[in-house]
Length: 268
Ligand code: ADP
Image (cartoon, rainbow, N blue to C red; front, side, top):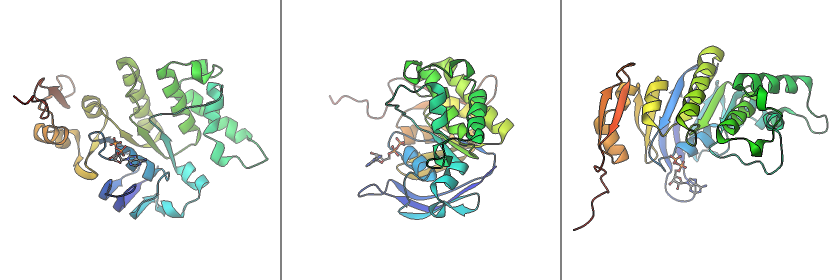
């Protein structure tokens, strides 16, 4: 279990702020969905929380330690990322890819230890990929690869798991399977989860808390009911919607109204 506290965080790549005064506290064991239009800053925020990028201003505290003062191994034992894209240039097997998750812990020249192998085996079991562990990564389907990458992240034995649009290229069955797996890692293993999500309805169904970014700022932070309102979605995503309670769960269910996109008017 680990908590995350982000205070007054600013970030820009070259000029212009990409993230502007982000303040966010995530309690140990929370499962948070990060929403927002393309370019609103979700991936950048995930890269900052995982230490890939450094903040221009502000602090990121992970389990009470400032990320900027932690070394690579200490960061890797706290936080792992499932990135949007992951390319392996070699003919690695799935289990070799999972073992890459142990790289930050393997000392130069001494090679992997029994503890590293045990962490990888457990991760393979947790992700449910034992049957494909010996197959070549580049010959797996998109859904299978996604699970291998998740297992690679789990092999780090992180306390905070970050996922950048984990279901975006998957069919509906694999989307649900992935979200169920992530939820069970949260409820059964106590992993704190932050996942960037594009599908608002699935975010509504699977996350207790949603953080909506708009142009680098937090526009809303709360329960799905608080965040997914008709006005807010219409404004932030420039798309007219109706929001009704889901007929079975009661969670907000977003219904898109075709032809009502704000930028969809052909000049006469
Ligand atoms: P999201 O994940 O919400 O789509 P991103 O964090 O990818 O948003 O992008 C936020 C903004 O930062 C966008 O304007 C994007 O063009 C810009 N950006 C993202 N990555 C880079 C980069 N490597 N160099 C320069 N600008 C970038």
